[in-house]
Length: 521
Image 1 (cartoon, rainbow, N blue to C red):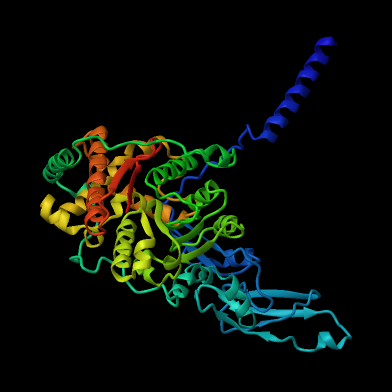
Image 2 (image 1 turned 90 degrees about the horizontal axis):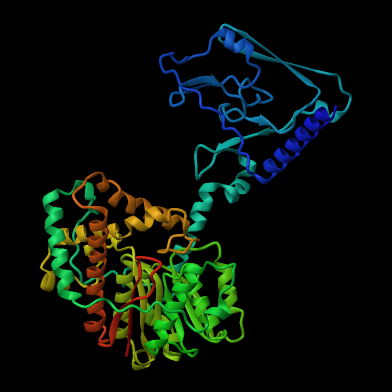
């Protein structure tokens, strides 16, 4: 008896334990095994009479060649048809009311179907009156959507295709702003060629080896000494950081603030223009480090889910002496029409300015300094920009084409190849940090991040099938390609913007996108 009781107790304990584990999510539900598709069985192009007789729902026959399946639609029939509302011809109107007392008897004879209706007797005038007919139409934004004409306006508000248009509506609105000027920062003095991104898997081994030799030579020439490194946190770090924030990004922002302070670009009287601002976390960090006493202009072409949250943390504080967000492509931003730049000192900043956006930004500063009055030139204090995503740069929009021709003596195609090779710099980082947030863009910018990753993977993963270089050698060449692209920008800032006090720093060891260009007057 004692042994039986022990068994019962143990069984109950196991049952309780299993329930707890299931509740906590430790026991995964068994996945349904996918049934193998037998393509040898021919698909039914048309239903048989037996199929029609046995099916009581919509009689629309669906042939799915991808899943190798043919069947009737599973939706209920419309009141006045053998088809559902979705498959019924659009020119057939539907009634606006349904009589629950009606019985529909459907009979089929030789592929023809008739519908008869029998209703119980009613004495009310409502049941005797004819129901109103409702016309159906195609959605003007997507013809696959079939809706009632009377509900068109309601549908347009919720239509997914309308939301896509609404998402980019701010781009059209920006064209009406005073600071918008079409392609003003498009490097208009550049040579423009028809060039496509180079897929590394399609490049011959000989060309890859030749360009690798040139990269080694260029790097040895321009970077004889190691790039200076300053990976330190600002004194405000411990006041700002909390457990709810991502340590990696906060440390990078803190290091940027330290570099701005060391370059005399850190002052609460400044207005900070953050290019490629994303959700504005760098600006918010600077604002907090100034004890909520500074001005900020956030510039980005995209909207973000956390936009309102971060913006309010800055603009609703009394100490914020200026705040605005410009939803505009940097390519079209005319800084000369921002009146605040005549009134207050300002600094250009960015944390990860992707690809050619860096070149557009440098061109916008060049246009500003050459087309503005003395007040603006005197108020301009300097630049602090972290570059990234060199693999999406291209010859047409590169800010220093003369550097490529006069000092490197390389062709536009060779520069395109160098841009593609720069994607190798993060091969190992992407393997070890697949689940981490991307350093190059804010976590809110999902659409840009996805497109950029797909393009980057196309450039490097396809080539990984070949064994021309080891992974370590690829990373080395990718790093050298990035630094070479940035060196041309460094010279542009020194020579074209007349800022001789320009330096580049390695500002973080948590990402390989870690170069920071900083200059002051």
